Length: 444
Image (cartoon, rainbow, N blue to C red):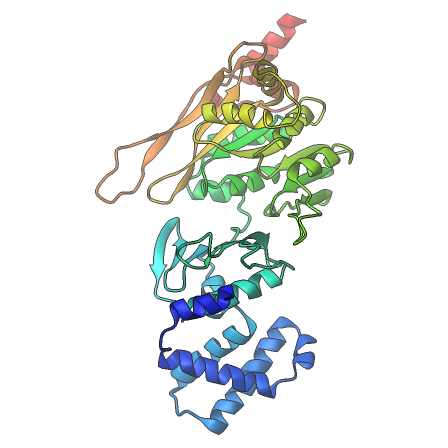
């Protein structure tokens, strides 16, 4: 018995009256339209045509409905015929950043950093599977018992992950992650992600071509911050972005976007992040931006950072700045090139200048928890010097996280690098331009 047939048997249940009407009028609609003609129309025109035809069908054959009920029925039927059914209203809601379907009758969304269940549900696991198949077909993928997991990016930009039985014991499971719009650093200040002193410091780091690693947990805002930082790169520089699923939205003109590719149904044609990072080195980049390092490509990225591609940026999953450098060391060791940990440590010390650690708090807010300089050049162990930390106050009854940013002097070596690049260290971080200029004159 096929997967779909088994799901139909397992999940068989009487349809609601609304579900029955949707199925009936969807069949009637498909009988009256010319599919070839519809395929030639733009998406907006296609939807308008279907709504108009369905309206005529309902007027001709009934049932008698109120204006509100009629509009809702037309919307449901067209969504089923053209879009993703009950998921369409969720996809159109700009406040929703993630949709999580845990089987046909449990749908959750993330809104404002909080996860909540919504009343929408699929009529059966079979209907959910049909929706999943429609989604993956748009990216020339398939999902069945022989290929029960799919991770892909939709043409509209959302990232989709699918896992179905027998791997998923709760039925077909679908996760849609909508990438947030590009925020500027000024907007992130308004959201409380950082303050003005940190903005000035990060701006100096980017313009002085420091190599920056943005670290944080899942959903902490790494890609959002990376995108905002990339906006500080001067126009005219050749930037190459390498991503698993294209999320970055750089505004500069001279940008080359590279995206990895999974294997096809025959298991061939895979192009990894590492393949793309290696190829990018042959494309004469001024800066390389890697959406996320999580394997052997970390070694290639570190070598690029320490061999003339200053000002590069990348993200990594880690819970603290200390964890970030250790994770970089572990990921770099996953390369087929067997390099001692001591040599990898020296590579990281040479390549990475700054770690920006993000944290997602219990109230859903996302903040920079720490900006730390890697100041262990030539040392036997990693040494991080914190330039700023977020100090949280104890949680109150409203469960809202409050606190303040605590700033410290940046390491003198990093301050001198900013000074020689024509940048300045904000006064909040303890080194004045006159002090650095005096040190420079004394060195001469």
